[in-house]
Amino acid sequence: MHKLVLLSLTLATAVAQAQTSPSIVLADMPAVGDSLRLSQAAPVLPASAPALTLNGANKTWNYAGLVATSQRVARYANVSTATGILLQFTFNNALFSPDTKANLVAPENTPIPTGAGIPISDPLAFYNGITADYRSVGFAATYMGTGVPVTYATKAQQDIIYRFPVAYGNAPDVSNSLISTPAALATTGFFSQRRQRTNQIDAWGTLTTPFGTYQTVRVVTKLIDHDSLAVGGTAGLSWSM
Image (cartoon, rainbow, N blue to C red; front, side, top):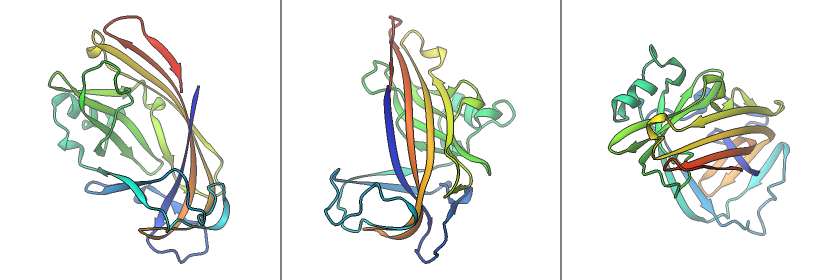
C-alpha cells in the first residue's frame, strides 16, 4: 500500500495583513482563463528555512530562499474547448450527464500509469466546483483519434479535492473514489483506481516565497491508492499505493 502525503499552503489573499485564519471557498478556486504555475525546488530545504512540521495558528513560513529547479503551468479552459462528441456529451451536458457535468478542463496526466501499454495521448482533467466542494469528475485522452472519457463509478465516488469552507479547526475530511477506463478500451487494456483522500487543515499563517507573501491555510493531504491494470486482454495486476 502506497501512502502519498501532500502538504499544500492554500493562498487566501494577495497580501499578508490579517491576524485571523483565512477561509478558502469556491471563489478562491481556478476559473476559466486562469493559469497556475507550480514551481518545484530542491528536495532539501535551505538551513534557514522553517521545518515543514511547523503547524498551528498564526505561524510564519519564510521560504524566500527557495530556488526553483523546474516549473509547470496548468491552464484552465472552458469545457466547450474539449474536442469530441463523447467528451461534450459526458462533461458538458447537464441534461443527459448531470453527474459528470464539469465547469473546467485542464491538460493533466490521467491516473493511467505511464508505460501501461494503453496507447493514449492528449490527456485532460475535468473539474466541477460548487458551493459545497471542488471535485474531479473525470479524465479524458485521445485513443485511436477519438477523445475517450474516463469517469468515476458514481457521483458519490468522485474524488473530492476540497470540501468548503477550507478553514483551520475543521475536522479531517475523508473521501473515497473509484475510477476506471471505459469498455471501449477493454481489448487494449483496463485500468481502475480506488482512492482514499484525507485532508487535514493543520495550520494557518503567513507564507513568504520568492514570488510574494500571502495569508494561507495549510492542508495536509494523504492519498491511499489501490490500482488494477490489465493490458491486451491478459490477466491483470493489482497493487496498492
